[in-house]
Image 1 (cartoon, rainbow, N blue to C red):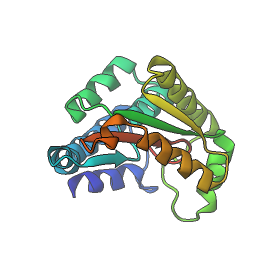
Image 2 (spheres, rainbow, N blue to C red; image 1 turned 180 degrees about the horizontal axis):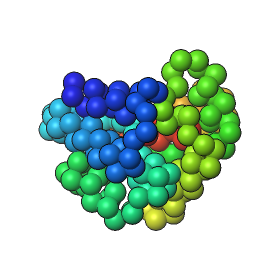
Image 3 (cartoon, rainbow, N blue to C red; image 1 turned 90 degrees about the horizontal axis):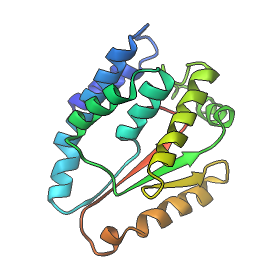
Length: 182
């Protein structure tokens, strides 16, 4: 899949220095391919679509973390997604230090973004919280510092609460994990 190949390049620890604009555009290209190949066809079939990252991840990382203009990142993401918006957005929130500790405990699963500074990750977390504040009715914030089973219980509870899921029509949810990847 083209999107996964782009994403692999973006996250490659050996990719070297990458301009913030290049990163933003490549994430958008990967997302556009995912929307075209997977999400739109699934929604057209009436399937429920759950993704672990979507446009808000790019806003948090490229606007919050990298400092690119919010309007520019928003415009690129709108183009990439064709304006698709999740019915509900879940923020699995935990302190940056704990998120990175968990990420690095996994061994070789770390990537280029994981290795950014603590200050970068703090800006990303702050950006997520700003996004939540801007659309509080769309977001559910889940304390991810708790045991994994409790967190996933809250995730599925939030997804089940969607009226569209209860009636079997198409729905979309975004789950964003801080301190992992964009």
